[in-house]
Amino acid sequence: MPDACILGIESSCDETGAAVVRSGQHILSNVVASQIATHTPYGGVVPELASREHLRAIVPVVRQALADAGQTYASVDAIAVTQGPGLAGALLVGISFAKALAFALDKPLIAVNHLEGHIHAVLLEQRQSENGELHFPVLALVVSGGHTHLYLARLHENLWTYRNIGHTRDDAAGEAFDKVAKLLGLGYPGGPIIDRLSAYGDPHAVKFQTSQIKHADRRDRKLGDHAQLPADENGPQFDFSYSGIKTAVLRYVETQHLKLAIEARRLALAGQLLPGKGKPAVEDVLGFCDRQTLNLVASFQRSMVNDLVTKTLAAARAYDVQTLFVSGGVAANRELRATFEREAGMQGVPVFFPARALSTDNAAMIAAAAFPKFLRQEFVSMDFSAEAGMALAE
Ligand code: KG4
Ligand code: ZN
Image (cartoon, rainbow, N blue to C red; front, side, top):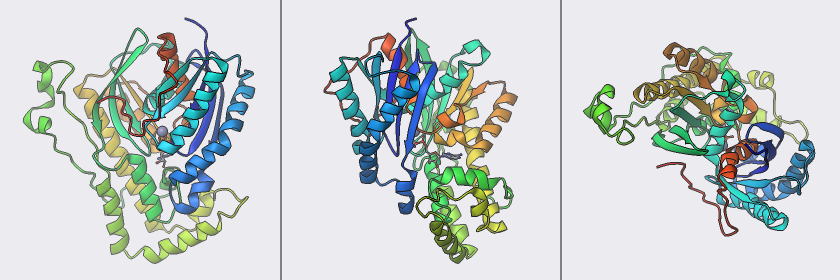
């Protein structure tokens, strides 16, 4: 197998990333410039600000990634860039820069689907264990701020193929974490702070129902019955829905009269966001949360985790998968990891996650996903463009 160094570039949302990865496995550098401080005052990502920040960061971030890797523009073998899905303006910054580099340096250019990148972030970790041997089919749960998707993944002669067997019908799981955190005056992004605060609350205190989605194919046949179906078509779908739980949290806030306390917390935490102070530590946030709020946060997280794990494992049984991957920003969640490890272990399915730092957006995963395409010489021409709504599989 050739030994290729790929420079990856990622700019689909609010992180500008550049990384150099050798042979799809060895991370030589991985630089991420986060825009969290820019978007925090608005409680979410503002697309125009994201593009502007990518423009500012892209050149220094790429230079830093090359320097950290001991590489030069001339020494890398190919340039890989995220084509989509993501914010169109943000994607275009990375794509324009990657095109300019590839053109000026006469290097091959590889377009990568961001979701495929998240899946390959797991491979970067998984190859270090079990002698790197991977048993197929793999079921990959990609769970981030924009996606909650289940893919069956297969590999044949360096060609990865994916089949979507479930997705969210409304909000993505990360979006639910972000919206609930915003609703409770906990700041942005919501996942990391809810993750840390949950350890201090009682997860059984508030009962939440996650939506039970009825699928035509589930109502009509039992899961075991699809043996007579064509092997790769019409299997059951395992969809998710997280707008209901967000509304349930809002209703709880209203009925329990928590609004005044939330507003006070929002103002207090905003005051902590003064320039140069960085993000408030969890200890600071804890000081503004009473027991009822901590119980609410822990109960919300427990419901989200249970739903994600239960549906994914049901899909794993239905499709008789041999390996489970969990990736995307929400895969950084401690309770999600622990629950998957426990439950998948009981089901006898090995489960792999990316290193926590590679769960959220980064360019190492883009360079890693580009490697099989490099081997297959799957290069793009200069007229390719961003695809904001790009799908990984139908
Ligand atoms: O993959 P990512 O960095 O960007 C997208 O592609 O969307 O994921 C960001 C999402 C945000 O919604 C963030 O709140 C969530 O991942 N997230 C977490 C945690 N860390 C990040 N959610 C739960 N627990 C975490 N520890
Ligand atoms: Zn992502």
